Image 1: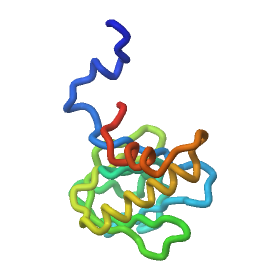
Image 2: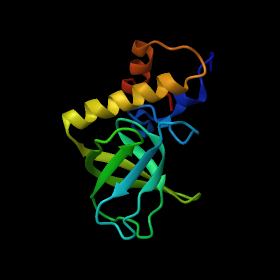
Image 3: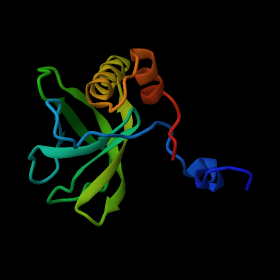
Amino acid sequence: MSGEGSYALLDAAERRRHQRIYVALVSPRRFRANLAGVAGGDDLAVYDLSLGGFSCGRPAELPTDRFGFTLQMQGDPQPITGEAEVRAVISDGRIGCEMVMLSEEDRERLTGWLISYILANARVRLSEEEARAIVTGNSFI
């Protein structure tokens, strides 16, 4: 296998387009999701987030169609809104969602959120350019 990582064996269609950022760290930048029209209507903890999707706690009623969502980052009064679809039900009580509609303005704001999160929580010193490359680049897995 000449030094190739096991990820190289995955079909390209199986890989995510963007790197998911684990955002459930103890950090001043916490994220919450509200799934519009979904039973329970409570804000759910977000566990990971990317420009293409997010995982959050599983709501009382699992959405079966496209649904509206609102993402909130603690300390930012302006939420991000869009539409998503459930792509995975995870056994530990989470769901994985793909964003299927997000305005360009909200996409830019989400990019900024993720860059600031990486810069605040990285264990090694990164430049803003390096953090942006992580957020906007291809997924490693």
